[in-house]
Length: 250
Image 1 (cartoon, rainbow, N blue to C red):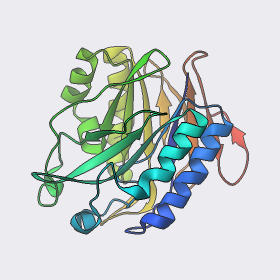
Image 2: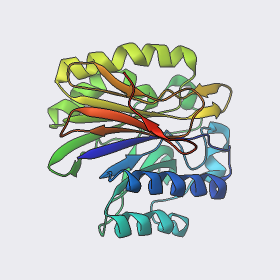
Image 3: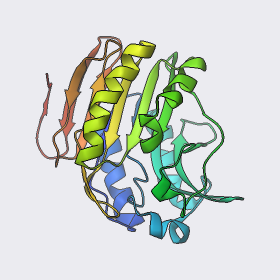
């Protein structure tokens, strides 16, 4: 099984432009023979909580059909982030496109205090099953709370998919926390971070993969766009950029 964490530079509020970048990244993941690719937090809209209400949508939105078509055509699971309109308010969501199957939605369960004025939390952890493996998505702040990973592990997760939007300070914390998650639960951890301006901070990329011993296998730079890919069968990881070639880090 091959999993890709995407790193992109989203444009705040420009869904059409961001979707076009998603298509490029999906094509790159397909070229890498990936089984799954997932994007940073709120990747389709950019991380901009004040815009969430005006940009909120649903998994059934026709504007998402092109991602479903790519999932079906290339037999690849795709996870893309956007605000989701729920009965109780707007959630930080990730829509999962599964080949020839209904779309699934994961909504962030643990919100940062700064998000509580714009969003409401989700209530259920989902588990994705891909090529016989069990994968648990986590969205930014909650992925730095060990109790979230503990809950995923109790559900049988073997891979932890952290979709984030993190500036330098929070990323430094993540670089210590994710190896601890990996060692605690003997699971792979793969992080997709965006790069460039977000709400009131600058996200610094460095999307990465850790093995079940907490060893970082590969990571991207701060400014590049592309994917970091984990090959679970071989236990190796590599970086593939949109502009330029691919290389293995560390």
